[in-house]
Length: 107
Image 1 (cartoon, rainbow, N blue to C red):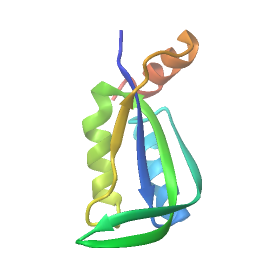
Image 2 (cartoon, rainbow, N blue to C red; image 1 turned 90 degrees about the horizontal axis):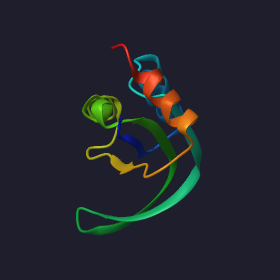
Image 3 (cartoon, rainbow, N blue to C red; image 1 turned 135 degrees about the vertical axis):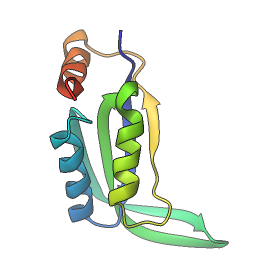
């Protein structure tokens, strides 16, 4: 059985989030990508505390496709060091998980 993941990433604009989401889904690297925001982030970067308005991208994929998902995000992203975090989906409806697998199959 496939290992399913939710990958999260933040972007500086909705347009950037949409471009990454479309590339991942069109390339069959992700079954879907949801965009939420804007969100307000507070973080430490290069020794200073920063604040930014960002957009949150949530991507559904499989562990098998994670490397390509990460590479696509890093390649397309405007940040020097984008957030790319994957969390294993411990459980979910059988039909939904099968849909994720089917959606990224056949590359």
